[in-house]
Image (cartoon, rainbow, N blue to C red; front, side):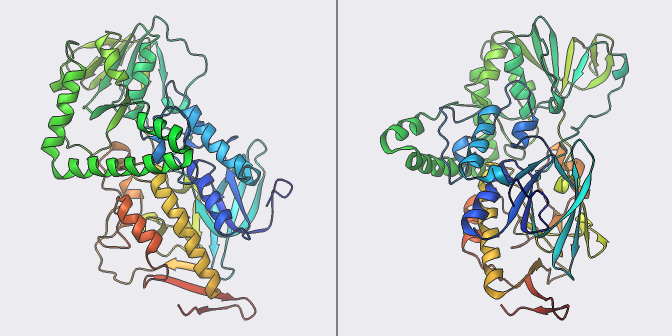
Length: 503
C-alpha cells in the first residue's frame, strides 16, 4: 500500500500509530515478511507519537537512547539523554531510510475495529482529519502501536477555586506557543518526570519556579553524555559501539532495579546521600522534599541530566514545596498548611489519562470488547481476541526494549502461520481457575486510576508480565510460538467453515 492507493481494500497488517512503536513494527515486518502488505494509520499530522505531541520546554527521554533507541539503528547524537526534537528526528530518519514514511497515512483516525470470524478479517472504520469523511479498510492483523494514554486530554484533578484564579493555567500536554516566562512567578503542580524536566528549563527565564508536590519522588542525577560510548564510537565505529553500550546499559538498568527491589533500605540510603550532597548548602530540606514514602522503583525513578534540577534549587531560582492544595485564590494557591503561593502561571503536571488502543471501539463477531475480562498473553496479545497485537513497553526499563521483542515475536508468529496455512491466531485460557491480577503492578497515579478498565494478567507464564528484559528476550525469541494456549485456524473460504490447523 503506497501513497497512490490510500484506501487499499485488504491488507495483511494494519499498524495503528506512527510513533516509536509503530515505526519499529513496520521495520521488522518489512524486513522479515517483505511480501506482506501493510500501512500505518496516524491520526496526527506527523510521526513521532509522544515526541510530536509534547512540546513543553526541555521535553526529553528519561532513559538513555542507547537502550531507548532501536536495536537495528545506532543512536549517534552526542547526548545519551536526549531531548524530544532529537528523538523525533531519529524516528523520522529511521522511517525515511527504510521507506516506511511512504506507508504512513496522516490524519487517519481509526474509530472502530470489527473482527469477523467468517472472514478471518478486521474491518476498520477510519475518519479523515479535516473533512470528517469515513471509510472502511480491511486487514488480516492489527498491530496497535497506540501508546497507553489519551493524546487529546491529560489528567486534570478538581481544584477548588480554580475559576477565581486570575493567572494562566497550562497543562504540559497542550503547551501554548510563544509563552513568555520572563519575570513571572511559576508554580508547577506535580513531582513526576514532566515536573522535574520543566523546573530547570523554566528557572532559566522565570523570576522563580516552585515545584508543588503532594509527596516526593525519587530523583537521581545522570550524566547527559556517555563518555565511554563516545570514545568507543571513535575507536570501533557507530554500530559496534552502540551494541556494546546498549548491552552495558541494559545490564546496569537490570542491576539498579533488582538491587532496589531486593535491598530497598540500602537503595533508599544511597539516593538520600546523593540528594544531600547535591543540595548541600541550598537550604532545601531533603528529609521533607526528597524522602518518598515508598521504596525505590516501586515507582519509576526520575533522572535529571547533569543534576540540572539541583542546580536550579542551589542558585535560588527554584524551590520545592511539599503540601496539599486547599484552594486556588485570585493570585495563586492556598495550601492546607495555610501557606499562600503567589503565581502568575500555574502548570498542572498532574499526569495522564490511560487509554487502551487509542480509544478505538472494538467488537469480536458483533460482541463489544470488554478489556477487564481478558488476560494479557506474552504481554502482547489478549485472550479471546484474534489477530491483534499491542505494543506496551517496560515500566522499569527503556520502553523500546520490549517493543523490539514484541515485533520480533510477531514476525515469528506470522511465519509460523504461513507455514501451516493458518489465517487466525487467538490465545485461549485453558485454566479458568487461574488467578487474575492487575495488569500493571505499578502504583503510579495514572495507573491506579485506570486499573479497573484494563485487561488483567495471570500469575504464571505466558500470562504473567515479567518486566524483565533478559527473561523476555529468551521467552519471546526462543520460546515456542505454537504453545498449548495458542489456537490456530484456517478459514476454508469455499465451504465457509473453519478447521483446526494441526500444529
